[in-house]
Amino acid sequence: MPASIAIIYNQPVACAYTGRNEQAAEDGVLIEVAAVEKAMQSLGYVTSKMELALPLEQAFDKLSQVKADIVFNLFEGFSGFPETEALIVEQLESFKLHYTGSPSETLRLALDKAATKKILQEAGIRTPAFQLLDEVTVSDFHLSFPCIVKPNAEDASHSLNVKSVVYDYDSLKNMVVEINGMYGRKALVEEYIDGREFNMTVMGNAILTPLPVSEIRFTLPEGMPRILSYEAKWDTESVYYKGTQPQCPAEIDADTRRDIVEAGLDAYAITGCCDYARVDMRMDKSGCIYVLEVNPNPDISPDAGAAIQAAAAGMSYNEFIQKIVQLAMERNFGY
Image: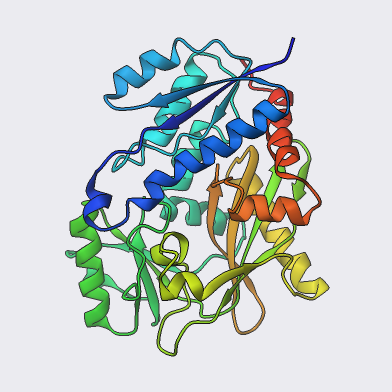
């Protein structure tokens, strides 16, 4: 009898992101769900879909009713409540359900960018120097300009825009106050590395497999910071979207590829990722690789970076999805 797969995901709803014209990231999960479901059915699995919505207790109750061999986890956190991404997986674990992607503790860590960077530093993995600042502590700033200012606990590039890279104290303070007021939390301030940007998807558990390295090729007008802003990911008509295109495989020499792969594998392992994750990196002027972020359970829509890298490795989309399911099925959950 074919294995049964329950696909869980969050119901897109209007929220604070809507008012900031950032709803596209929330709605994108439906494209991802449709693609994964189609692939699962083509592979012969028996599939069901479970859309989760607030209140949290109601979502937990729905999860208690899952009767499937594997939960394909596409849940990204309820709109405006990113911490719920880990809470839902924690509930899957409490019900002793097998699921795709990283465990709750990894999702919780990755959502706290500063905590992740601290763990990377302790493991000897390069990451840009950083501080957590708010309007009260911004006077304690001691990094070197330019810096990039972003939310510490958001994904999908929310609130990253042309103003995010700052070159003086007044601009820094304005952005810190803006982020602090918007999210009610300290802003993450990092020294900005104005170099080549790469990302790499890693797949596996006991044995890790790096997919081909991808580079973000920036062709932006003079004066626009070379960053993957919200517009670059979600607004197809924007200058940022058109000026930040991925190239996979990246055109890099063997030494650079080795350094990127080594950093990506180390970051994946040290943060406890499972099945698949994407690691974002930058190269400084001297050729050193810095890990910017670790992204467990990244977007796996057919046009997303992870799927593009899988295709560059010779996998069809169906084979990519099959590999994720296979890894979850073979994983030791310790239940």
